[in-house]
Length: 114
Image (cartoon, rainbow, N blue to C red):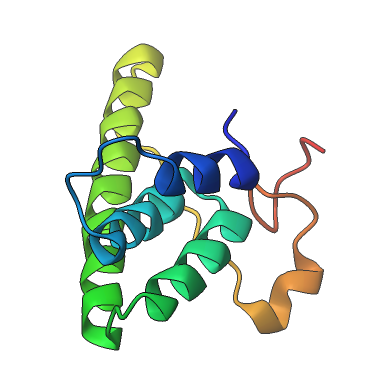
C-alpha cells in the first residue's frame, strides 16, 4: 500500500520529469481520489494549488477520478452479480455527514458485519 509520504516522494522526485509540477499534482489529486486516500487527496490538492492549479483544473481532475472510480465499482458489481447469480445487487446510499453517527460500519447503516 502506498502511503501519503511515498506518493509525495514519487511525485516530487521524478529524475526526468516530462510533466510540469502542476500537471503532476493534478494527476496525484485524481489518483488519490480514485484510490480513496483522503490524506493523499488533501495533501495533493494543497500542493496543486501551491503550484498554480485553478479551481476549474482541480474540479476536472476530480471528475476524471470519479468517472474512473465509478467504472471500477460498476464493473466489480457486475462480477459480483455473475458470481452470485443475483439478478441485481442493491445499492446502498452513502450516509451524509449529518447522519454518520447512525452508521455502524463502512458497509452501511443496516450492516451487521462489524
